[in-house]
Image (cartoon, rainbow, N blue to C red):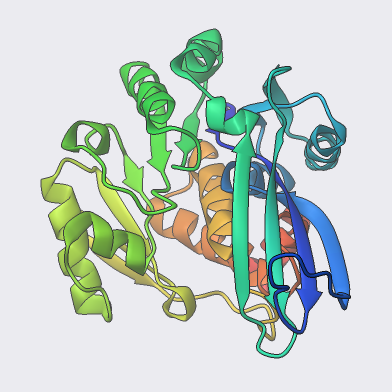
Length: 305
């Protein structure tokens, strides 16, 4: 199996739980705190590594304690870092306020070093990308290096996956570099201007993305599974349930990581989609994002059960 190369960001999630947000100049007592790993690229790399992939992570980190969190979770998942240490910045972090009454949250993300990922970082890892089986990226780092990475991968015959999150306007030129585009409903709506509230609308949005040059669209639909659409076929693949849903944070990242592994192993598309769904299906029965991603044996056990 050829490597999976993932370009993306790591941030340290700092989550505070309290009854309300303090006013300016005010200090209040909180009811809980959690520090953990985050960032879509990192979450996807961890999911792919735990699912059995040979995974490399291209990013930037600062030279600080939060960088140690990244390296620790990557090490446990078998992810190989292709990291530039940016001494002029800091490892990204997110402030997450959770209202203990409603469960609603408010978030501030400071990408730090990862927000400074540049085309030069992609060029420094050109050989790694060209030797990969699958190249994956998202939109949390600047778009220019993501576009450049997709172009290098496509020119080398590497399978490309773009998870267009967070939602952003993208050029047809960039979309045409994507073998697989994996938006959720809101991201597909932004890219197409079409509503996505049912399977028929999802297919129409996917068809619109195909007309813009995408090879295949995989719309992640939460409890409705995924809709796959390319020029030859349309598949609706239901969720693979592993039990009661506890926390959907990072489910999309788990799907993308699992799906990338299945593609790298040469699985047929229907089987690869189901493998991705099983990865996500287990993750939502646990709390957290990267921490909830399952090991390979768990995925295989669910699929065989």
